[in-house]
Image (cartoon, rainbow, N blue to C red; front, side):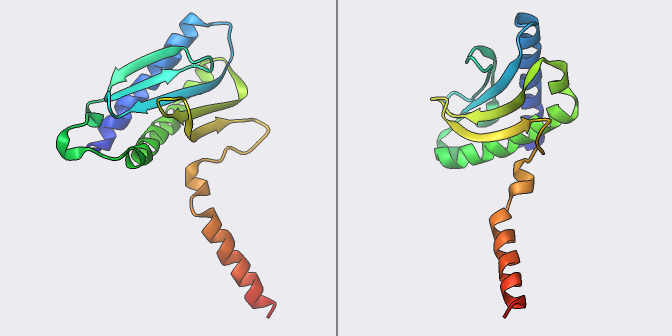
Length: 155
C-alpha cells in the first residue's frame, strides 16, 4: 500500500461520512458497533452500522489490484488493520464518536467480506480501560520476560 498518509485521510473521511449518515438517518438510535470492510478485490472500503446497514462506501485506489502488486489476503488484512486502525484512532481523537449516539461498550471492528471479524480496532467502555493494539503489542513477550526475571530472583 502506497502513500499511507493519503490512504489514512481517505479512510477518515469515509468514517466521518458514515457517522454523519448514521446521525441523519437514525437520530434516535444508539450505535453499539461500527463495521469497516476493506475489500482489495473491489478496491473498496465500506462502513456498516450494527444492523449491517451500509452507511458509506468508497473506492480506495491504493487497494486496486493490479497484476504486479497482487497481495495475498492475509498480508492485505494486516496492512488494512494498521491503516484503518490509525484512521479510527484519529477520528476518535478528533471527537467523532462523541458526536454520534453510542451505547457502550462501543466497538469499531474490521471485518472481511463475510462479516467475520478480522480485528477489533477500537473500543469505548467507560467501565474499562480502552486497550488498543499499540498497548497490547508484544504483551506475551513482556510477560515471559517478567516471569523469567522473577524465576532468576528466586533461584
